[in-house]
Amino acid sequence: LDTDDKILIYEIQSQFYLKGFCISADSIVGNQFLNALTGKETFSDFIKRENVKYIVTYTSFNYRPIYNDTIFEKLYTMDLKLNVGETFINHGIKYKKIMTNPNFSDTDKYSVQYWGRQLNDGTCKIRKSKNFSGWDSVFKIIL
Image (cartoon, rainbow, N blue to C red; front, top):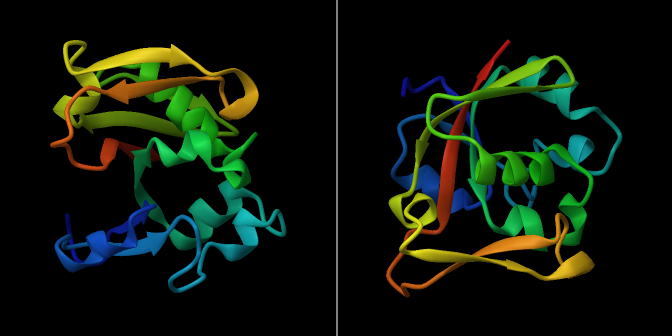
């Protein structure tokens, strides 16, 4: 990372150990993302205007209702399907999965469970270990 790289991230406390500039995906800290989160601005417009380079995914994108039917739910769903290095396009933005948490990607360390509409996309990876980092994967944004 470069110090001017912007990272859209749920766990904003990550700003204390990442070199780039972190933007809170829930807008509790800094509220830069609030207009996109509340639908006053499109996600694509926000990404382009702020020149966001990376998005870090979290399981919270799937269980927090505010993320239902948003790019965060789509990222979570695609994260379950994509391998590192693979890409997908949504609303003219290309996302490349560049790294993943071993606890999120190793099938011996999780099980997929169906929870229905209690969760945004209906399924969730349940981690078997209590010793895991909270992030799932990192996507690089390619405009």
